[in-house]
Image (spheres, rainbow, N blue to C red):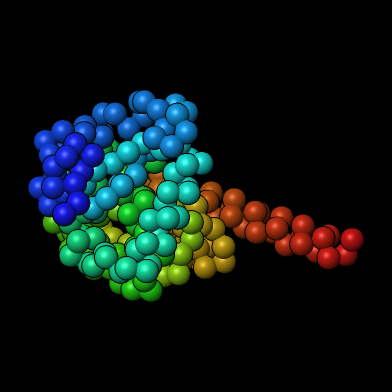
Length: 228
């Protein structure tokens, strides 16, 4: 039988671990890195899976190494299924607000799902479809977290669906995801969109302009590189 660091069986976990997990929304920017002892740019990573998951704080450097080990382990052991993913994602989304410049707990879980299997876009569509009408704010929060990740296969297609949603918060989240990813596919979706909210439509037009300019600059830079 495995035990948590306080000596309690992992199947039950101890109250100290549970309290530490529940306090993450208040503590995730305070303390020192569990790996190297630094105190800047900390974010939580789930160390092992229990009914009350246990987290530790890591800086971005140590965190990247730990996340890779976790991803490799999941790839090898396939321990994450959809039901567990759904439950854990909702817990993380509800644990803290999504703030600019602050890594959210849900992001590392979404990354793990993308790395683990090719069905990730289907999982995302499934859970978004479940909440898009009943709890649009949860749907928007999930889309915002997805939009913070690096581009992944199927991402633009998901945003193409939700940029047409009746809820303005969801549309805004989808637009910002496409803005972050850029590229011809994202620009194409944005060009086809005409938002009913003037402020958001104006924003879309500015995003298209900026992305097209960025694409053109990249093309010119590549031409120069090849000619030199």
